[in-house]
Amino acid sequence: MIAPKIASEIEHLWQQAVHTMHNLDERAHGWFGVLANAFKETIKPASAVTSAAIAYFALFSLFPIVLLSISIASFNLGPLMDQQLIVKEFEFIAPALGQLLGQGMAIALAEAGADIASLDRIGCEGTCESVRALGRRYHESVVDLREASVTYLNLTVAQIVKEFGRIDILVNNAGTIRRTPAIDFSETDWDDVLQINLKAAFFLSQAVGRIMMSQRGGKIINIASMLSFQGGITVPSYTAAKSGLAGITRALANEWAKHGINVNAIAPGYMATDNTTALRADPDRSKSIIEHIPAGRWGLPEDLKGAVVFLASPASDYIHGAILPVDGGWLTR
Image (cartoon, rainbow, N blue to C red):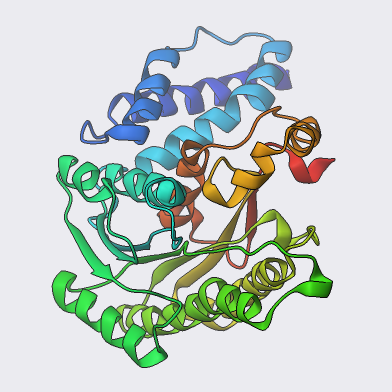
């Protein structure tokens, strides 16, 4: 006699989810529009559920979709709470290729309704046009993080607040890498990597954190690495910086959660960027890396879109100090 009652409850929840998805705000667009429309096309009114077997199938197979559907509708993906966004693009000497990860995340957040302010050393390289084409604002500050003082970073953040009025999201994406065996590693290579990958990220978080505390909330997303978990080979300063960034993520989460600030990190796997050019150019090394990745391929900028928008959205409000791997399964092996 329990099965029909369970079935009735499942049917009720399912119908609620269908109703929610069919009324999802049509302003959702871009990456989220595709997702929302996919749900709309695939979710159909459930037929009468009359058996315990179907009830259990609905409970364990369909309920995650129901929860996701309700979550998507509840925070109205377009626009993303009309939030302003500061995205610090990929800091590297090469032009377009070095910016691919930052560019992909900036566009994903613009698609979700955020305005963009970037700190970049080499220009927006097409990101500004892509963001503006989505109807969002784009403000660029030319900053060389290798030389920027803490005072200068504070002034830059203040200028962005003057331009936009507030900052709701900070993505610490700037990074560089130097490859030399540890026994021969130079002080310059050590200092440059730690300055950009760790020190600048901390003091930008501090500057933006003050703004977010006055606003009583915000999202800080650090871009960590597989080397936040592992040692790597011939990249000691990069490993030190990314391990430190994971630690800072947890430390700031401990202190700032009470202020409504979520501090989390994304740890990309082996991505097709200029940081991995040398690895991808080495047939043996590239082959060994791909064989270690269950997904069987190098990651792409598009692979970070879902993670960054999730951590920037209200769906992650109860997540603090997490390091989210987006690695094709690398860490599982």
